[in-house]
Picture (cartoon, rainbow, N blue to C red):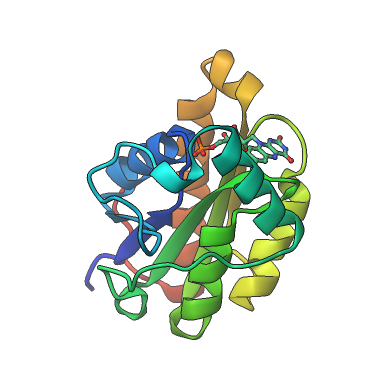
Length: 180
Ligand SMILES: Cc1cc2nc3c(=O)[nH]c(=O)nc-3n(C[C@H](O)[C@H](O)[C@H](O)COP(=O)(O)O)c2cc1C
């Protein structure tokens, strides 16, 4: 039986979600994709339009209004994967606007989903609920990593446990061979 195909897709404004996403993709031997916003500078280390106070405010307003961002078509076709793991920072106790846009655009192609978010400290439950509603299906597993988890050095363990839960659930659901 072939191994499960796994895609980790994420948006990150300031690097935390990106770091967790690449840790997870490494553990699961998954493909990794950053959601790209339309008009963003592909060479910029951080998304220029979301930098600084102006970018913070723009992000905040989009999240409060539950408005999707304009994003580029994906590099990896999500329909080709057994599970797509979607990661977002929490903005105003909500999912970030680029991840909102990605879930709206690709919900019909998703077989199994798992969600994770990074946050300062509050609002993860609401953001994860929004992701579930936008995807139109319950996640096989979900995970939140707060700033205090990061400061305490707990992020690697939380992501490893999350990867383990995804593997266990998929084995039950699909009897796919799962290699961690
Ligand atoms: C516009 C905006 C709103 C935010 N709102 C929240 C919030 O409601 N709750 C929270 O715990 N953290 C909030 N944060 C903090 C981020 O969720 C946190 O720093 C996250 O780890 C950033 O991820 P990133 O580095 O991948 O962009 C907010 C950050 C931004 C930019």
